[in-house]
Image: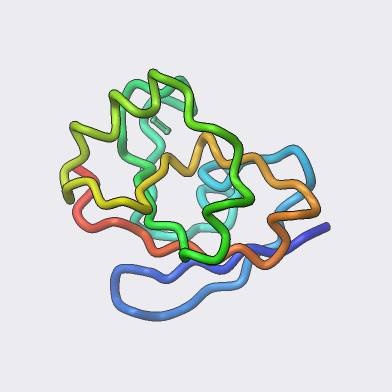
Length: 107
Ligand code: FES
């Protein structure tokens, strides 16, 4: 089991256990983290799992699929260079300890 840290919309930090192979949207929803909605269940069609990834982890993420890149242009909070969809961040050993800030608002 690995851990991810979510910086919530109120500024608090929540450490959550994330199984290898699980994604950060699912882990957040299963752990009751507020601010990540995940309306589409990870189908890359809702953009309600928008997060800002701490810079030191950006290089460790897999390449963005064209669909994710497109959806990020329609996020409610506005896209930033470190924007990603949490449903597309699949936990692996290299991402252990990843820190993401939850975008606000999501809708
Ligand atoms: S859960 Fe819908 S885009 Fe991530």
